[in-house]
Image 1 (cartoon, rainbow, N blue to C red):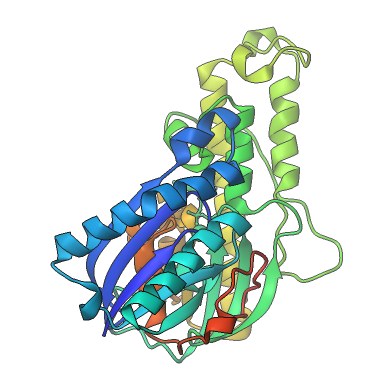
Image 2: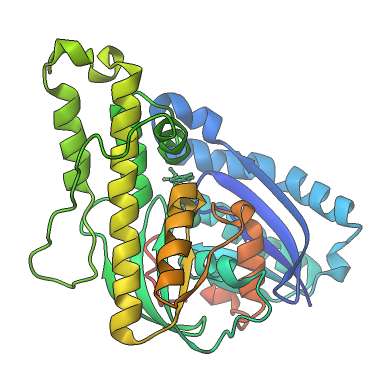
Length: 349
Ligand code: KG4
Ligand code: ZN
């Protein structure tokens, strides 16, 4: 079964053709990120307009490169949520229109589930119906879930404040690095000492043992940056901090921040697997592109006899292949069900 996947939940207009949920026949992705960079974050109106402008051209290229026409496509899978309302709507309307023109069924896909599916897409031996723990770490979400296959999820914990990717983006901004911040922090951290600062994650009162909180580390970085200390190159809180920072300090802060976040995310995931007696962990979302995190997860899971599924680099951040892939396992929606749901929760379809 050949599925066209459409992903437009944020700034990427991403399309893909995937055969039987596994084999990627073609992908297209254009991000409007360059237009958002000077604002330091994604501007919803710019993102949704870019999807409308880019979609048709990307679709034509995808189909002609793969030597495929609308007739060869068996179904269309589209991200319905969560995401930016206007961006989601652009994709859902495109999917509905193509479904109507080509007379093909359309499947609704939860973006967060698709991030987890991306991890197992390239692993034909990975059982899809066994108990697993799932960790979603993206720009907008951070959640640990208990999974029974790819369709039943129960929330173990989530972030109380910033999502992991959001924390990377905000700390990068504090340090005067570019946007999106995750790759910038990773690059800068390579030059720094990850033990220069001890940024511990605060204990969370109440709620679940598996909840996360990252705003405390972000604030600790901010205070360190603003502390007057001429020998470090920091002149005081009133100056725009990032401009007065020495590169060595920026590298040490980036490395120490990254280490604290990696330790927290790895520790909670492994703890969940151990206490639920689950031996499979699936991780998805843009932040799993972070190499130190990938390496640490593999190392700790190896020591704990937990099998871990991590997406290949090209499937970590938003892409159409994970949408088309998961679309293979789901039932088509009715026309009335095809709506954008910006706050679609984990476990909902
Ligand atoms: O999953 P994604 O593409 O979009 C959402 O669904 O949110 O994730 C984007 C997030 C951004 O916050 C970005 O900074 C982060 O993933 N990210 C990274 C890395 N690459 C992307 N974070 C840490 N290290 C990276 N290498
Ligand atoms: Zn995403």
